[in-house]
Image 1 (cartoon, rainbow, N blue to C red):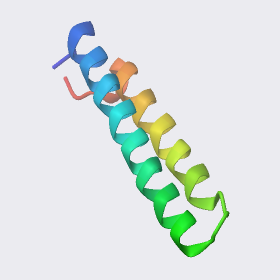
Image 2 (cartoon, rainbow, N blue to C red):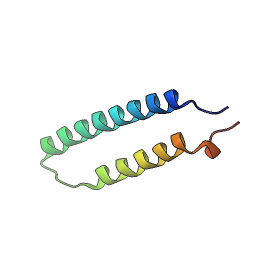
Image 3 (tube, rainbow, N blue to C red):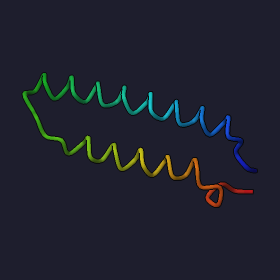
Image 4 (cartoon, helix red, strand yellow):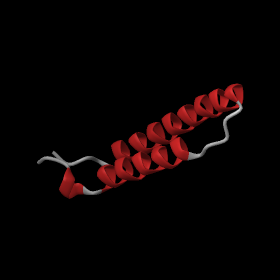
Length: 63
């Protein structure tokens, strides 16, 4: 099954929204603890890029 462009765009919107919410929560926790490590942010960016690649790479979607 191929993903339509509309579905891909909706998935990307949801992915971006989720990433922003997770980063906001992480930042709130970091500030509460006085921590300034960006380690988690780098990991989240890697996950975001991987999921984005899967959304837009039709070869990775089962037919």
